[in-house]
Image (tube, rainbow, N blue to C red; front, top):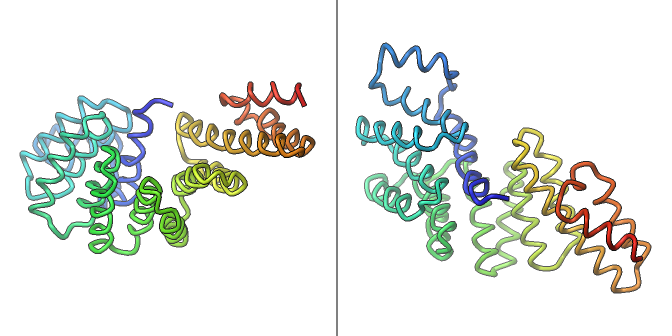
Length: 273
């Protein structure tokens, strides 16, 4: 899947975590009408930018978020929005500069440090990401901690602190069930070659992805199919041919998984076994 889809995930989480920044979102036509009366209202401009992000109109959103920041530099959310947008646009160096500047002024803001953690993670600075997520945890309320624990889990996975990663993912899921936490958990089990648990995690991710847009659902389907396929190959190589066939059929016979790159591979081995 395209890199932009992966980079968009943290931005989508932002809206879940912030609860729309504590205010019900207006629809596009309502915001445009209100902006005719208040063209320099940073709240309305920010909400319009949020809509443009969801529509993937990133250049339009960028101009609006910049204007929000110039109009209301004392609002931490304006730094978060702009930094996350640049991260989504695969410009993490600019994103890091913006959010690091914000961290100086808002040094007890969990959302700032959570955003910094995501940016450092995407830059591959996993030790820095770990520090940022830990700070976010200390400055956030319970509702937001599930997402931070998930960030800590995937960071520990990259640092190969596997037991810590498992503990963080479990803490995250205890607070809130989320398809992307299961997805990241599944990637840990793939890395550990524990394909049965990977199947469990990706299956849960798929089950809870009903509200996710179709392009992102396919990211989950691909990883679930990968887990099934690798488990089947292991069974095949250990003389469990009938079990392997049953697992491969879960790829070819499932409407969603049959759309993945592993369907053709599964079909090949079904004809060979």
